[in-house]
Length: 162
Image (tube, rainbow, N blue to C red; front, side):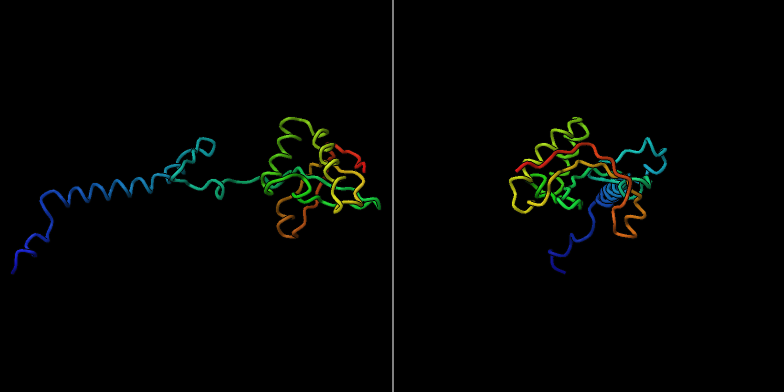
């Protein structure tokens, strides 16, 4: 047997260190499961390990959404797309609408700015008024029918002036 193959086995203490290291990694990976032992309000989610509350938390059946609607000259209602509401991606525009209309409580200012943007766009020439609306809808009905029908409350409106 040549000398290269003599020291292939474990050295003294290596197995113990490997076992301790493996147990520590396994405990770290499984530690989020301890959150299930806590009452729901006391559970904490953390990065990089998560117990996925976005999937396991009970959701309300009712949900409200703030959105913008254009009223056409013939009385029709159009849900204005994110491109009409502002620059940026869908989520950025949605957050901006929520921030101004709800958190800062300035829906009239947002409606006025939106009416001015709609007036400058030839795509929305038939829109005569814009509304900032809160719609409360049933999630189950929405997901099964693929429609967002619900009780709407107009938070603000503004006339579109050419």
